[in-house]
Length: 278
Length: 295
Image 1: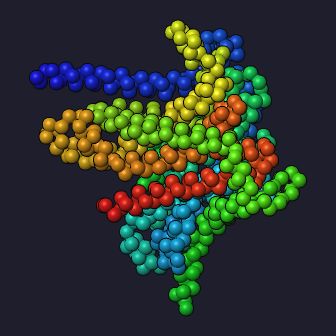
Image 2: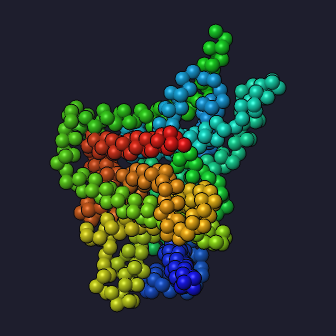
Image 3: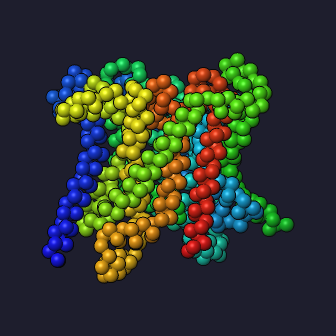
């Protein structure tokens, strides 16, 4: 009886491992294929899609870089950096005001800011285009900076607020006793204590901004203001069948966020888990 | 008096966030309702009040209904794979004894969710490509030549091909979150169940499933909401074609407004999207509140 059970258990384990590893191959193979194609020539690509590249040259990467990817990358980096700083600070201020400062209508204001979480960006698309045209910011870097910041404030505030609310009250009281004002208390005491959640929100915001497509596609058109996700589609449509160059561009776009995920995995997972329902 | 002033000054902390969210998130929403009652040509700038005409046209628009159907199909398939499938997968991973392998598998499965949908969409555009795509090559290699086809080029398979890509891209994200939820279940509960002679399958159904049900509820809602906001992958892979067969609400809105220059009509589609996503969000609040009462 015991041996029969363990025999079944062994069979079950074997099947489970086979399934889990097969799934890993299903995930990894397309990504490996993409990376390898960045090294191939067009003839190789159309020949045998499963073959390894004959010559490991970075020529396609250089071509992609010179055909606009350097511009897209620069814009992506700039938009990501500026909107991350703006979003995280504005959200941290708001979270501080909502949790640790006695303000009128606190509950209503909390609901107003967090309520933004419920609204889909697509719904606001048409009026936003008109608004940004009227402000003369359509097809500028500012459009993306403002939109990425405004649309991510609710989520970021939600995460930081949930963290700040759990910090002990005595901290502020001790600071007040020492004669520190609100401003000093925020920068010197509360913000440093929130470092783990700030790290999470920074990483999640970077992932979001780097990959965002809807706003980037609708609000920008010239090469100087396009971010990588939109730039890649331009690269695809402009250069016909120079597919290996497109693959090289895709790798350039994907690599930074994959590395970021592996480096900051702990914080990203925590942010995602808290963000979905704390 | 001084106290009131002091309290009011405290608002300064919140004002930047309020202004940004108010002007760029809430205001457009209200404007959208107004725009949906206009016949509006953005190039000539002509605007004409047409009442509910745009909504009436929506009801008669077969592409609108097929787009709504595509979103619904997206939602159903995603809930099967990214909620129930992911829960099962997370339980399998957590049953592995080696923590190193658990971490490695969770991370590998998550990689597609870290890269952009544009990259994932383009990648699968090539995988499905009839001539150079490895999918058709593989089918031919194993003698299934008759199955090799232009996956994204024909109406019968295009939508399914996009949805399949989306499962590849998204299942690791929900698996990771379910794994976190399972890790939060106290080990003693599993221990007690094992002592009572409950096998691994029983433990899954009688311990794991009931104890992660809030996460299941929230994942279902998030997945549902995402399925109705699909845009990026469709745009990159087919742009709604062939013959509008892969249009979803987001792409049909975009095409109506920005390609066919009919912003009032686009705003009407946006209103439908708003009602759907708001309904889903209210359901989420309800789930979250019920949980708080229970605990």
